[in-house]
Length: 397
Ligand SMILES: Cc1cc2nc3c(=O)[nH]c(=O)nc-3n(C[C@H](O)[C@H](O)[C@H](O)COP(=O)(O)OP(=O)(O)OC[C@H]3O[C@@H](n4cnc5c(N)ncnc54)[C@H](O)[C@@H]3O)c2cc1C
Ligand code: SF4
Ligand code: SF4
Image 1 (cartoon, rainbow, N blue to C red):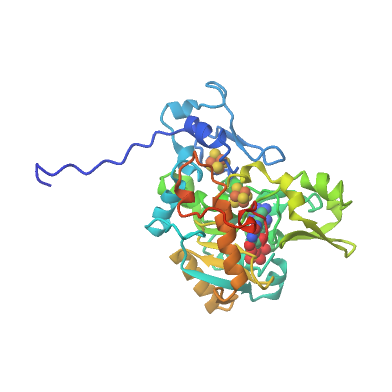
Image 2 (image 1 turned 30 degrees about the vertical axis):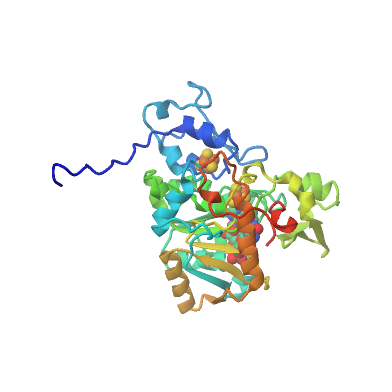
């Protein structure tokens, strides 16, 4: 550098702490409850209740009030570095993962391949919600010693409460026990604490879109050692989750369907419920909207745009998983699994229904992002045209 050349601009120092997180994300309703801030806090002063009326972080120390943090005042900034709704989270994660920003027309984010995938093994396929791909991938990663465990979700106790809870999957049986979808919230990131206690350091995260942006945002903003444990990031397409109260207040109160007697549920345009006595019930999604979880109402990410592979059940065939393969790592895993016959794949572009829904539902979710927040998630989002296009996002698959 000569004396006349200007010095390169220094990156601005990151000073935002819990105070800013509280003001800009929690108090404004942007918080999804992903628990990224909870698991990264090095001082363990962020609490979280994984239950109805909870699913939000709160400060455990009251010295400075619940909206400020004494460690933050002394320079700790970890929570804002981990939050995938804080300021420029979308560009930060995009640049880190892909080295470029999403193009305005890329409603479902950046990707390398669109595939329909199913687990080759019958039991895994049958246990899965759609094609059983997520379970097949977790089993393959564990059995080939790529990971020690996956942070995933289970049903509490014997399953009759239908309460979704985060947990660790360390082997094939664990993975199959957690297979399938529950439509209430499970902050799978919270299982990180169990992994730490058990000395497990090589992890895969399975999570809805809000959770799958946690690792890339942490990596991009250098959130510290917690971020290093996340080796694989598997996303679940998602337009909403429901309050736990939906079981009592709608399914039981109006339809007489006891959760203890439910055996399976799915969302395919309607809420589908299968009961122990063999009966099958459909509930109009419009009726369910009143139980949409608060944290989902401003969420702009349907497609889990920052996962290595995002997975969903939209398409012409119910028993295949739609996979949006986004990163070189995701592509490599898919290729290796295919090579050893763990999964069967075919191109998804030919499935017109899946392609249309993926774009439409991603667009509709982006429209929920409020105008006062960082504008990146709504770049390129067209205004609603027709009535169907403008309707609130259905959790349809
Ligand atoms: C709340 C929710 C909403 C969804 N909404 C859509 C949608 O609108 N459109 C769409 O196409 N796809 C949606 N999906 C994804 C879809 O239901 C399947 O999870 C996906 O296609 C993968 O299917 P699979 O057979 O490969 O997965 P499986 O092999 O069945 O594995 C599913 C994995 O998801 C985990 N999981 C289940 N429930 C939860 C939960 N509540 N929270 C966190 N993790 C969980 C399981 O523990 C398991 O690891 C949603 C999933 C969830 C959980
Ligand atoms: S969005 Fe996630 S990381 Fe951000 S404040 Fe909420 S729980 Fe914490
Ligand atoms: S809509 Fe889905 S991805 Fe978005 S905050 Fe809710 S659970 Fe998370």
